[in-house]
Length: 270
Image (cartoon, rainbow, N blue to C red; front, side, top):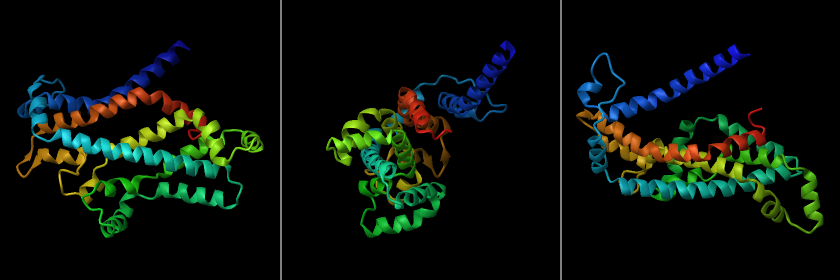
């Protein structure tokens, strides 16, 4: 048993090193000179040149980028939580034959690559006049199939007798959702909100396509400030990448226990 436990923990440690190695490489690159970074054989030990972070912060309008991203991500998260909760509740407690069919269609959209929808989505957004606007970056992602799936599976775990008892007491469907379900849905809400936030925060291709005004661009597109015709200043670019990813990493660490609980209770992992 002791040997198996040691082997198991050694395997976990090896996996952790593999996962953290890319992040460490970017961190080391941000603290090293270009010559040191491009030397061979390459060293993963940084030179601790912290001045590059000050230079990276001064090279771009970070306040604008952070403000745009927080606004876009915040509105997207709120809208996704509302649509996912309502749709998941309807699919979990509907007794019509259409509900399983609709649920199957929603699940099927998870297998459609996002790239295949970019052109029709762009044409639709252009016709609505949403190019270079916040609406164009928010509205297409206000509902997600993953959010509906997680909420539906989470709510389906509640005994149907609770809904029947609430109906006998005179509660409507929305009343049952508001007073019985929502107080116990914190893990699912946090998980859907977090994944929606991460997707919006790290979005690059779609905002790049529909915006050309820095005043409307989010932080990931703003990283293109560090790419010029003369090439990439790798230490500066790496420092900028670290600046953009730190808030997301801290948020994920803070909320990870809710993700584990939500997946365990929804039965998706099984």
